[in-house]
Image 1: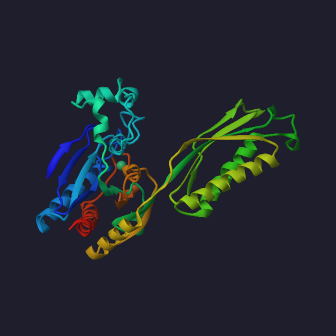
Image 2 (image 1 turned 120 degrees about the vertical axis):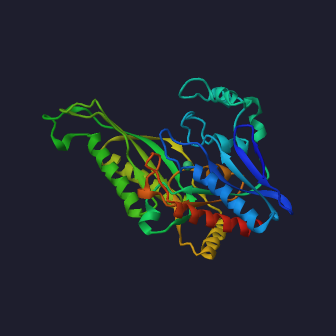
Image 3 (image 1 turned 180 degrees about the vertical axis):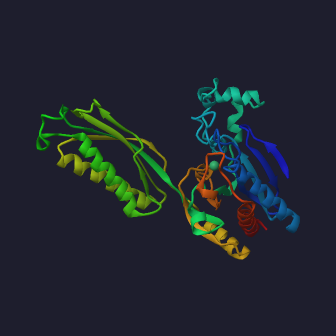
Length: 358
Ligand SMILES: [Zn+2]
C-alpha cells in the first residue's frame, strides 16, 4: 500500500486499481472518548486494514482503487467544537480560521495541537478529496440490539437525526396552600403532562423512535410555591426523515394543546439539529449479499449514534457494518467486542469490497 498522512492527520493507505477511477474507501476514527473503550472507532480502522490485506493476498491487485483511512478527532474529547474534524477536512468543510478558533480543553487551540505533531494548520484545505466513489465504515453497535436478537453483524439502514428543543412554560406563581387547584395556572402540571406525552409518543411509534427529557428547571423553585415558569429539554431522534417529521409534529401539537387547555404561555427553541443520514440502498444490498455469501447472519439495524459516515455521505454514497457490543456498552472502558464478532464483520466487509473492486 501507498501510505501517507494528510494535512489534518488522517492516515491513508491506497492500492491503485487497474481500471483507475474514483476510490472505494473504508475506515473509521482512531480517537476515543476520555475515558472510552478500545473498540469504538479503532476496530473499523483495523477491520479495513485486515480486509484489504487479505483480499490482496488472495486475489492480487484490484480493478478499482481501494483506500483505507484512519480518521482523526471524531469524538471531540480534547476539542469539543471540532465536530468531525478529520472527515470534515476531507469534505473541505473546515474554514481557514477554524484551527486557531477551536479551543482545547487543556488550553490552546486545535492549531497548537496540529503544530505539536508537525502539521501546518495553514494547509488544512489540502486534505480535501473529490475522488471518493463510496465509503464503508465498520463500527461497534454501541447498543444492545444485535446481542438481544442474537446476530453477530448488523447492516445499518440509516443514521439517526437528533433534534434538541428548549421548552418554556409560564403560568403564575401563587401560594401552595391558599390558591385552590381550579384557579391555578400551574406550568409544572403542564410540563408533567407534556413530558409524559412526548415520551409516550415515541414509545407508541416504537423502535427506533426515541424521545428523552434530560433536564428540567422550575422557577422560583420553592416547595410552597406554585412555579411561575418551568423549562425543560426534549431530545428526539429518528433515522427515517418522514417518521422523524411525524414524531416532531406530534410533540409540537401536544405541547400547543396542553398549553392552550391549561392557559399557559408556551415558547420553544430548536437548539441543536442534525439531519438523518440514510445509507445508500445499493451499498446496503451489496453488504446483504456479502453477508449471505459468507453465511453470516446479518440484521438490518438503524444507528442511534452519530458517525463519520454522516459527513462522508455529503460527498459519496455510504454504508455501515455493525458488530455486537457486549451488554450494549460503549463510551466506557467496559466496552467489548469478541474476536468472533469482529471477524464476522470483517468477513462481510471483505466480501463487499471484493464485489465492488475486483
Ligand atoms: Zn465511534
